[in-house]
Length: 140
Image 1 (cartoon, rainbow, N blue to C red):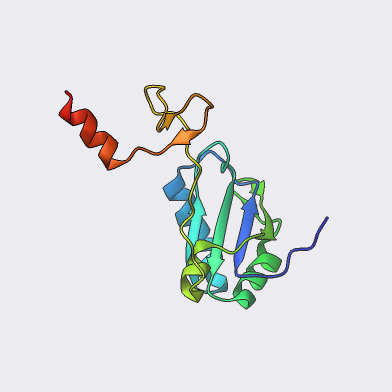
Image 2 (cartoon, rainbow, N blue to C red):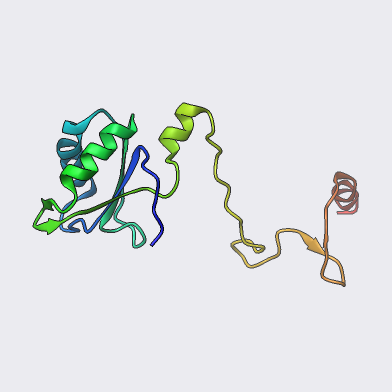
């Protein structure tokens, strides 16, 4: 297992799924804020994010103290597991000026199943120009 360098963001797993997201964030804030100022808490109920959360502190010392103190702590009848996050959180990136908006690749098709751009006979995409659009309008 690779070692992750200490950082300001903690990754918490094995969280009970029996409570709402609002209750979870509030409870996590109450528990973790005793170790230092918290910048952000991310917790969602989606399939990929269930039973996990991220807590971002304003400094590494607070995150380290919380990790050492609360790892294995029984939280809603389950022992939570705490690690440092593998990547920099958006909250920290915004503070240090390295934040970049994420872009996600979109599908080639539209909702109706039609291609989002025209293709020639070879299957390569051809960009529509305003000239070709205006020509088709004149013939309508």
